[in-house]
Length: 424
Image 1 (cartoon, rainbow, N blue to C red):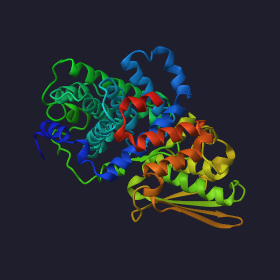
Image 2: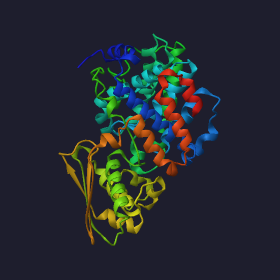
Image 3: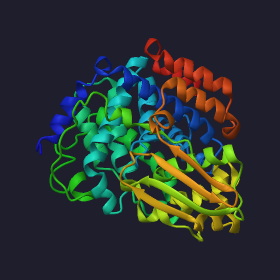
Image 4: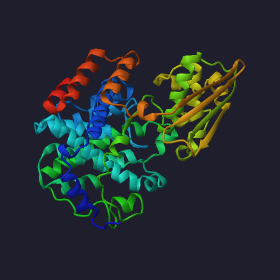
């Protein structure tokens, strides 16, 4: 373990400039940026956004960060790295601080890389421990990550450690509401982005921050995990950044791949009725099955079903598709009967986010496999553009806007951060 985590972190990320990014990393960051911007456009029409929009004004910088982050996260279809969704915190901070400091597109990509790598470094080492204590890693680690992205967009050297210290001192995030089906978790990314922007602002204004803010007694790692030493991030030829993905369905991350398999199968076969369905076997990676993923209801609050593999697979099989409003079917008798037929089989032979689905019916056995998640969840910019254009009827988004954003992001190194912000 390295006892100088904070100094090593600042040193590593200060040197993490655009030319050091691998071409595959740049491509992945562009795909995630396009996805979250388009999903954010959809998020402006969500009930979660409309509920709090009157409380804030787009004319105030910090308010705009919060509203943008809320739009990105409201539909639960944002990016992911494992169980973390850092983009709604990182991207608004990188964009808005970047526009304020008039940075170019290559500098924006550098800021995104810095932000995601901070979140990844903390999540890899502290995530399991924080989760065991009941904390949700997206806001806890995402606040520090987003503050790092804001720093990288500001291009002001010397304040990095101070900004991270202010961010680490103001992290938060309980995971209970996600499991309980209540709505508190839906605002954690937005409030986290606000905390990060606030930390960056006061850090850039010269307000002092501690030198040891992650490790050491009573600091982030100690309080949230009970751990006081960490290894600093290391350049791993893009391995971590290449594990960034995007969510195609608004369900818990470990239900995502089974739901996709169910949608594919139902689209080729036609929707499955509860009367014809005799059994459902769902094979998923063993390390990606948690007790709450196995519940079948009935749910006292419908949102509890967002984490369930059986319920969401049943919804997709029954309807032949998966759209956000279909979660309301989780307690419907026809869906419940299919869900109760589902057998979840943890398989140590499957890779991350793979899944195999077998449906036994009165007419025969039907199978589907998500065998290459790198094509499904980790696309190139061109693939992401194509997938988003297919999804625009569901999202209610202009296909012309998707194409304009994709073209702008494809060549963003030759443009400015302000141009992308103006488009959204």
